[in-house]
Length: 607
Image (cartoon, rainbow, N blue to C red; front, side, top):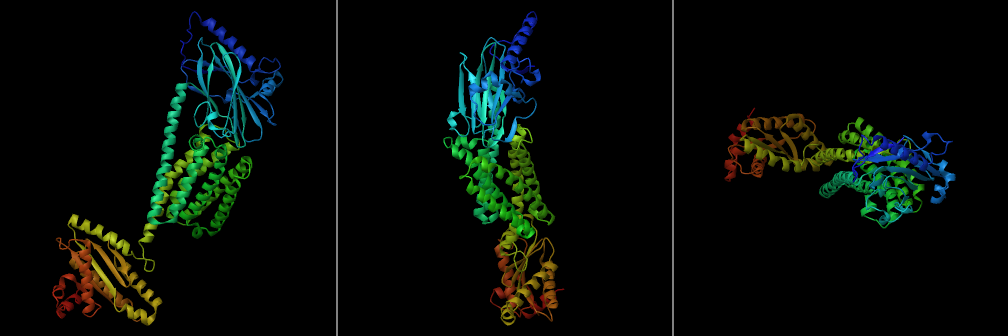
């Protein structure tokens, strides 16, 4: 049986009609010759034990050559090309049919043989592509126009310029003579996974494939570069370690993937075969270390699951040991333990994410979805690496596809962690109220909004009376208790969208959007009474309050509004403390006179 690959030939395709019997006869003769060249002429061998040759016709698409390969396993690796072609060894070549030519980690050398049939009167140019770039030694034999065998010896343990085409995977341009069947041989030897992924393309089809491929790779690595720059800026800005850990993970993983798909060997170290091989091990171990550390950081695993966090720590040490050993031992010795370790770490990280999710971590929701994508990709790729799944475009790129989805979704997890970090930096550790930093940011936003919509905005500044004396008398522990008590009363009294903040020391401030002069007076007096009544007989606290209200553009800036409320506060303290003063009632004070007693009584009489 002959499979047809459709090619666009420089000659016209054979015409049917009167010449149809002739063409049928020609194809049958070519098929018979192809069977002879593949070793099928042996009458003792059934026809199903011979790989099907490929018939080239017009309008090329492309074809995977797996079903058209005869394979020979050389367990000693000592067979020569002459011995392989010796008729005594022809029966050792066996077709694999529809099975995948993927043999996982093996020490055997593998020979592949395939044939192309050109039925045209002109030669046909095609390109044979080996799509898995991590092959240590790949030798290719073809015949020239005189029938002499020529050899190309390449692989990622030879310099990059040994490749006939400057490309990240192995490309072999060949010319099939007119009206001929041509046989080609490949020899594979590698310390890593043995993946034989051969395809045949027309030059035009391959050009289109490479264009789409490099566009996808550009988008993929462009995303890594954007993530690297973004997280570097965030780390420099906020000094949060999570961003440094994520930066280590992204950079090491991005470089690992560039080695994995052959780009690093092509562009970074084309003359350094040691780096082309051992960099994969070093970067894999480093990316596993970075991934574990990032996971521990973003999920806060030391709190969510101390036991799993401790296991993560030991796994990181193991990764560092593997990284240190990688330059010293053979690739084959290290790649299998690292592959197993990758699976173990993937499952372990997934368990950490599940526990963090069960305990309500905000970032874990995004992390869980993101890492599930990577985990699926890792499992598929590793099953392919060990020869359980077939080698094809999906299984070969599953790792890369999963990592791309993961990196996109992890940006949501990092954003969630950043929001948690911002909330943490905006909170006062003692009182759990918003702090001075948040107040400074929010008051400007609320002031601009109030002026834009012509709405009132009020502010109250609160100070615990005689707090220094209280601290000196009862100690700082009681002072902290007093601050937390007042903060609790503020939280219980003030409702959203009003915002209570600790301004500093014993001073608090309230931002009250859409609150007019009357309402802020009522609220301030309610707070004063609750503090006095709620702490009577225990802490015996009182507070002084000053407030001001933006209306009809009476204040130019948010700072002016704060200064007015603060001025009212100190007026209250100078007039006896434990009272509420409105800035509008401080005119006499601003002109150098004390606030009249009737004004103080009027304020305290406010219900």
